[in-house]
Image 1 (cartoon, one colour):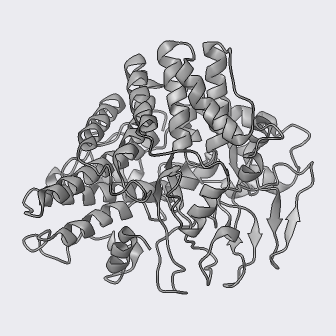
Image 2 (image 1 turned 180 degrees about the horizontal axis):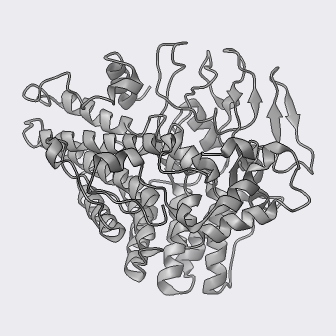
Length: 521
């Protein structure tokens, strides 16, 4: 297992992995004794990374419950089971899942702040120190970005918690917050590694920072901050830098990257997965774990709950008719994204009929691809993608089209690289509006179930109308009538403009008296 996970395993021996983040970071060693060696600093940095590898962030709540329900992906259960839940847009300001995600993100920010402050007095090797500080600065900025794109105006916590009387912070307006995030990430560009971690998607490196900068810049360019052309230019600049680095490519096999993420094998030939959150172990079955439920709450239908079978999945997330209709029949991503079969309790493969469409579950995370045995019923070793090279290419194509108000040669090259890998025809001769729609559709084909679509719809300014269109599609004769598939219509009918962003948790408002609730909530 990779070095960062070894550090996390060491930390888990000091207390359950889900528990040690609940205390002040590394308070088991006094400040004057800590960070005296490179190993101390590496342990602290692993603690910042570990904020992402919790069930409250990329292990389930943020990645799936909050982010993976949109116009192409819906929660597959009876509509009555979405009452009061965020994945049914029936939540309120007291929703526990929203509060847990908020808290986990800010705990990660706190860990990063403590590390950055203590590193100022550390006398470890300057090259190592510079790299660790760069990674921590980027991670702190990225965690803030998760909060900004989800809750809109949030507090920027740039210092560690020291005084209860001074802990209340007002929200920073979203444009200002995004600009600070961009500046922090840009500052980290010259500090993070640009060589040793090139073949490791678990670690932040220069190309990752550039790719994420493209994503943040697109958010700043679009609705509701409407930064426009300067930020599209910045997005194009950073996405182009990733492309020109020559360090990443698309694996010709659309399945291979996903199989590797499910079995903890890095693809060092293509490096398509640029940054992923790592999860390990079978918990009490092998004594090693992080709290990841990828493949279990989101994944193909698998019904074998034994420790020696192919695995169990609750298949809570399925693809809509809108998603199915985006694919040509010869698009190799269709059966990857919407699995053409389910696996029963005896590990037999049962293929869907041609008219069974939305019955097909998310196919990108399949427990049959896991290699770890014994298998835990609920927790998995499957990693989760944060940034892929295909995403960078599509961001490049979008930014080029927007800043020039017309698709450029580079824009066509970028989008057609993604399309040709999927086995579909390249694009040419499109207007600005036509190309923009193709980009939006292509991002749907390529990136559904990766915690991106919801935020794409918001920055395009079409979230509400897109969800309403999902509801309309449930009246199509191909949509099944069973109660498990009634969620999508109920979700669409509940959706209002206020659902573009989540409410600030009520508990947080009670603690931070400088904060105010999001408008419409």
